[in-house]
Length: 499
Ligand code: BES
Ligand code: ZN
Ligand code: ZN
Image (cartoon, rainbow, N blue to C red; front, side, top):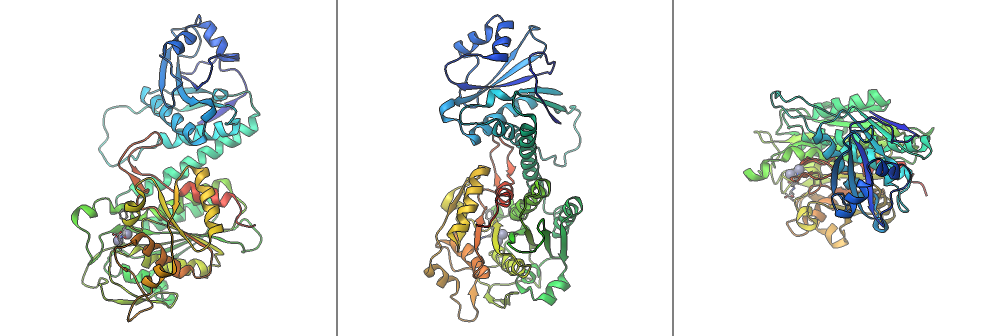
C-alpha cells in the first residue's frame, strides 16, 4: 500500500498530494515553489489570505484546475515550527488522513519533506505518517447488513522524498506495524463478548504463534487444576465457557534469560459476579480483556519488528459470570503461589486471575513483569480517561516503561503504593490477603494486590480502565477500543531491559 520514491512529486498524477505546512515565515521552496509558480503564485496568496492555514490540524483542499498533473492538494497545518512535536504531528496527519478517506480517493501522494523541520527528522516524519494514517483509518466493521454505498479506500500511497530511501522505508514500516498492532488490539477489544470468549482469544494467540513462530501453550481447566491455579479457576466457576491460560514465548536469544514478562487481564465479560454490577455498569464490560488485547497487539508488533529481547506473554482468560456454582463473597481460595485469598467482592476478579498469571509468568522465568489490566473504576476517578495509572515495586523499571510510553505517545502516571497500603491488602482474619480492602484508594489496592504476586521481581502495573476505550472519536481513531499500551509494550521490548 505504501511505496517510496526519491523523485519530485511535481509530475505525479495521484488524486491528491498531501503537503504539511509549518507556521513559519512563508517561503515555498524547491518543488513547492515550482507548484506555486505553476499556479501563478495563487498558493502564496491563499496562505496569505488564510484559506490555507498553518494552524495545527487545519486542512485545506485546493483543486488545481489542471495546472499540474496531480488532481488536488491537501494542505495540513502543522503549527509553529519551533513547537513541533512528534505526537502532535501524528494528530495532524491523522486529521489529514480522515479528510483523504472522506473524499474517497484511490491514490495519494505525500510530500514527505514538507513534514520535516528542525525538530522532526525524515525518519520521524515517515514513521509519523504511516502510524497516524494507519490509526486514523481504523474502522471496526461491526455486524450491520451490507449497505449499498460502495466502499472506497486509498489503495496506493506514494511517499516522495529527497532523503535516503532505505531509512525512510524502514521508518514507514515501523509506523505501519505500530498502527496495525494497535488496530488488532482495538478489534479484539471491540468484538462483543459472545464472539470473543477465552477460546477465541486463545485462537487469536495461536494465529500469531503460527505467523511469527512464537512458542505457544494453552492451559485447559484440567491443567490449571493440576497446577493449583485456584484464583483463575475461582473466577471461572460461574461460567459455562472454559477458561484458558494463554502463554506465548518469543526467544530471539540463545539463552532463556533476561526475560521480559507481559501479563494481560483477559476477562472477556465482567458482570461483577455475585457482587453484581448495576445495569449501567454492565454495558461496555466487553472491554475487560483490553489488557489481553494490548499484550497480543504488542506481540504482533514484536513478531514483525523482531527486537532482540526475550519475552513471555501470559493471558489469564475467562468471563466473570453467575450461576449456582459461582464464586461468592466470603469464599476463601488458594492461588497458585500458595497465598490464600479472602474474597470480599467478586467484582474484584481481575486481580484474582492476574495473581495466578503473575505466578505463572514467574514459573516461565520472567525476570521483569508488567501487567496491563482494566482493573479499577478507581483509576478513572483518580486520573480521568486519558491517563493510564501505574504502580511499581521498582522505580528504575517504571522509568523504562514510562520512557517507552512517551515514545508511544501514551500517557502513564504513577500512583504510590506504601507499606500502609500493603497492610490493608494483607488484612484478613482467615487468609493471607483480601481482594477488596475498601473504596479508599482502590486503584492502589488493586495494583498492590497484584504486586503481592510479583514478590521480588521488578514489576510495573498498568491500570487501563480509563484508557482502554473512549466514547469520543479523535484524529487517531474512532470511538471504541483504543488499543492502548500495545505500542508502549512493544517499544519497551525494542529497548533492552539490560543495563
Ligand atoms: N473491570 C472492572 C474495572 C473497570 C471499570 C473496567 C470501568 C473498565 C471500566 C473491575 O473488575 C472492577 O469491577 N473493579 C471494581 C473493583 C472494586 C470491586 C474493588 C471497581 O473498580 O469498582
Ligand atoms: Zn470486576
Ligand atoms: Zn473486571
